[in-house]
Length: 144
Image 1: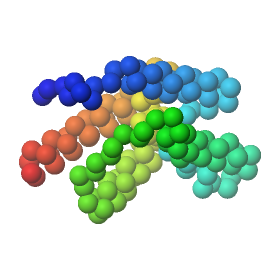
Image 2: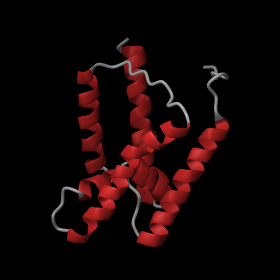
Image 3: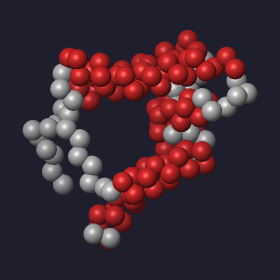
Image 4: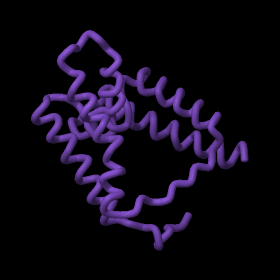
């Protein structure tokens, strides 16, 4: 394995990580909620919590609109997806199932849960990382 030094951007990655951590901490501090994307989006489809719809829409709108804001100041990086639409659809369903089964997603467990020293989040994060490593190994080395 080698590092692609031309596209290696440690400072922008560090800045992005700091911003994600800061926003998750501020969300927890001011709203008392975990910034887990699957829980926020899932809450949009629950009618039991009438006062939560506006902030959830604002959060999701921010996720959708932020690349457009970035585009106003810089060029978006090129994206290359080496998978068919069918593969992407199956992967999306599996990720959705996994987030419901694991009671959260990478942002909820990996960012927010680990920072709160949650054992459940540690187990969940180790599980989805291991599943990702195994999937890449199987797809790239055993099925290739």
